[in-house]
Image (cartoon, rainbow, N blue to C red; front, side, top):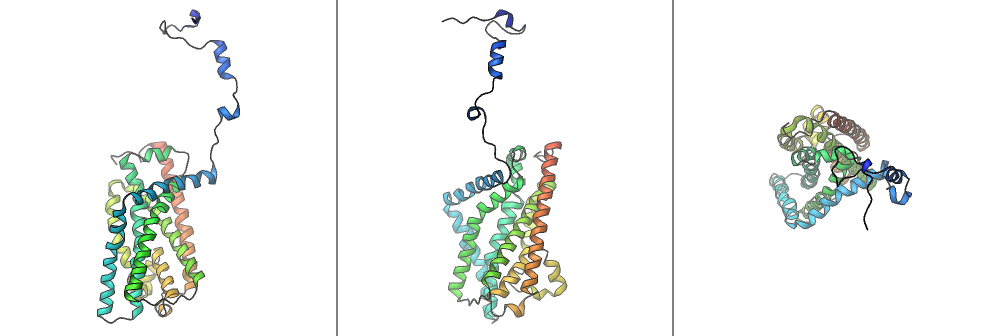
Length: 313
């Protein structure tokens, strides 16, 4: 069966085997199709946000299962550093609760490392690998992408923290005296919210520093261990230094948890638990709000100027 071509419909620059649509085909294409065939459901608002979080968390959860060696190196080897502090306290015959302080600090280091390496420097690494432009032009928000990465990484983080806590409690017979499970849960939840909000804020700011992101991450790691009082009561700093260190969520969070978990905690606490809960709530709102502002601003700059995704910066 031969096809009839309208030779007058050929454009001047078209070859003998090329045609452009006729008026009848134009009308056929212009006719509306059925909604099921022509329209796809578009996710908006919180649905898109939630789907993005789950989509970005999935690769990290599966990745941990494909590399079992990472679980060993990220769980048992860091426990050795915590054991070192424990033997120091035992050698100087410190109160037994100080051993519990060291174990709790060793468990919380996992969350700080997850924030610094899995969130703060993440956008910089995505820029180096060429994925950042895809995130910028996607219809979802960068905050949802970062939150998904953080939640996915928290699987290994929670496992490492739980192993350090369980092993330390079992090996060294640490006595826990929980005064309020509700307040303990509130403190932990607010601490994690403020901490990961701070990580999102760092992720946007690290893009401004470009190639210095790696060095900044290394620089902030050890000072936070010291200022947050991971292995000793932050009250030992004195009121002025401890107040300045309270800008870090881990400082107030661990101080409040120690007061709620150990018998000598209230006497070694920096502030009252109720006041520290209020300050943690303020930090959580402040860091999450600041992170949203800077992420939106960075996204605006990237889409309008096209400089943030340049790997030469």
